[in-house]
Picture 1 (cartoon, protein in one colour):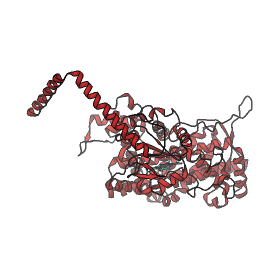
Picture 2 (picture 1 turned 45 degrees about the vertical axis):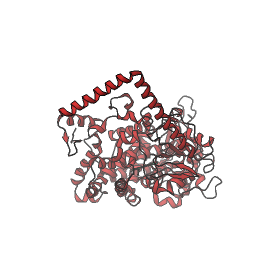
Picture 3 (picture 1 turned 120 degrees about the horizontal axis):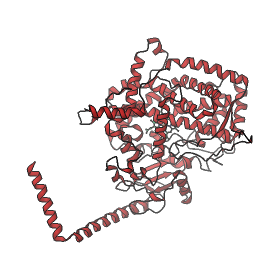
Picture 4 (picture 1 turned 120 degrees about the vertical axis):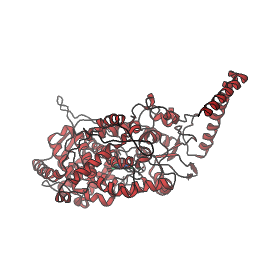
Amino acid sequence: MFADRLLDNIILAKCQLAIADVGINNVVLGLLTVAVIAVAVDYAHMLHLRSKMPPGPFPLPIVGNTFSLPDNKPWIYFEELSKRYNTPLITYWIGRQVPRNPTLWINEAWCAHEIFEKKAQIYTSRPRMIVFGELGSGQSNLVTMQIRNQEERERWRIHRKLMHIGVGVQSVRGYRAIQNNESKIIALDFLREPKEYVKHLERYATSVVSIIAFGRRVASYNDPIITEVIALMQLAADLNVPGKSFPMLLETFPILAKFPRFMPWFKGLGSRNSKGGHYFFYTLAEEAIEQYNQKSPSEQASMPTPYVKTLFEEADKYKLPVAELSGLTGNLFGAGADTSSSTLVSFILACCAFPETVKKAQEELDRVIGPNRSPHWDDSPNLSYINAFVREVLRWRSVAIIGGQPHSPTQDDTYNGWLIPKGSWIQGNVWAIHHHEREFPDPDRFYPDRYLEGNDYKRPFPNDKGYMTFGWGRRVCSGQALAEQGTWISVARLLWGFNIRKARDPTTGKEIDVDIFAFTNGLNMRPQPFPCEIVPRSQEIKEAIEREGRQALQDLKIHDGESQYRMSTFYQQQKKKVAQEPIIDEKGNVRFVKVGQ
Ligand code: HEM
């Protein structure tokens, strides 16, 4: 120890002597020269790469094009660039890491299909992401998981498999009763309190994933699990839009991510990772398993086994650490609640802005269903306009407007003769894809007919669904089947039950216009708040909604229950407890502790 210190001091003294010999000015000049050469080499490398890549604006040294990004909705700007350069794929330099990994934006469906679907094998990874990845959930969460080697591929496969067990195509049919009943409750809530339609839709979406994950229903829109999870997801979605302010500027200057978390550029990101704060959902899961185990065998038989129970049993086989289990559980909420409810809010906006489509949908529903019962999935083969309506809801203002998270090729690739370098950040601009005049003429018009055979607006599309709302390839949304199933039943039932139209000014009696472009700026976008009028279509329908709603509440009773945990207080309590009695695991990390209310 003493010898080491002595050696350090000798080296330091030698350096000081050397600096004194050479002169401080010369040292500064030398350092500056090295810095200039480093920047020049880096820039030359960037320009060399650029010459082989898809077109895009000319980048500056170090910062690339970062400071040309607009303050809001960069997806519209990328769409414009794609038109300006007349290419489906553009390159945009947001600094990124060394070596400078560029960002590529796909602005057209066929190009997205060619790259993400046909070459899915090499586009399965995520890139290195500082904000959402390294400072967020990192490698412990499926959403941000990178696949750089066989071990990471294996781990990602296990996570996909475990998500699939929960909400894969085969499992979701088993959740129809839950979605059906919960959407009957939306109708009941719309009768009672139509002005709070956004909150009812949020309650519905959160309750469905809560029942699936924990076997526990969310009965009130004031339940903190809704307000806290949705607020957290909206914050995450806002913070993660490519931009020229912090925290996203950390993607341009990743070195700043190495500083302590109290530095101002981390504002908004929280400090949960440092002290075992990932474990809120793990704790909820443990609680849910305990509650399920206390139910009688007949009660257990009358409900689907909560996903967390199956997950914990399966996960034992793979020895998944707590952070990963927490991530898998939390994803149902994080990825499923805000997205599903925002989609339905956009549906309400479409009804207000395009009343002719509501009329047409209701003509079909009256003909096929009538007023005495609401529609069900089994009616779908006879409801071609409703089916088209739901597809148009998913296309028109897709919630995950930049396709969720970026993909990244695990080897150099080419498209149209252009290079897509290994490790680059490649993202589907769903706004531009769903807005392309060739595939979707008059794209801002909400027009379900475009999905009907024989319609003039019906155009070829690279997949059968006619939209790319849920992403691509092996990274396609794990909850797609659940989200589509839930959107269908909710849209069909609400169109059947209600006239949803523009609100009227109480003094003038005039309709209040809605703005179909007024959306939030997050990467999960939803309409800005707008007033609307939601009224039952007839007395008979109103009675059917009440009858079905009462029965649904009865059927859902088995899922009634409460959690003692709150996200907002959980982390504070953990911090306090960890500070008082830290548990250090075998790797020297501070482990989580159990906290109660
Ligand atoms: C309307 C509702 C939804 C939309 C529009 C949506 C959209 C997306 C998109 C665009 C992605 C990224 C795909 C890609 O990288 O190519 C994604 C990923 C994901 N979604 Fe969804 N989602 C929705 C609902 C759900 C639900 C209900 C769940 C779970 C219950 C869920 C779970 C996930 C997960 C776990 C991923 C990450 C998959 C991975 O990285 O391998 N999503 N979603």
